Length: 166
Image (cartoon, rainbow, N blue to C red):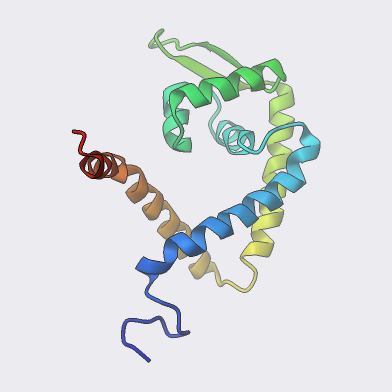
């Protein structure tokens, strides 16, 4: 066996991440979506409701950053959720330029159901992992998400170089 392969014969992680991560995320999202579709929400709304359930009253800018989405995309999602009676917005008390987002009672009920669904799915996805492995996995994912977010500027420069536009 080559020294640069993982013990079970897989290629080095640097060449496998993209090919393993995308299908895994698709499967995960499919399972969550299947479970929450009866709550009358879209797939992208689950993480937002969960964030607000943990810390209600966050401003839109912070929520967009935590979800790794453009502020305009978040605004569209919030418009739909507000129309559906899940959230409401009000101007920030300290900084009137920003809106704070809050769960309605309906939003709180749906967020609690989502929490139970995610716990159910996660327990099955992580079956066979020891507690330390679960924590390490979560730490790795957070680190990777931070790295990916930081890459935006580098990738934009690479793209500009490849197209000859700067």
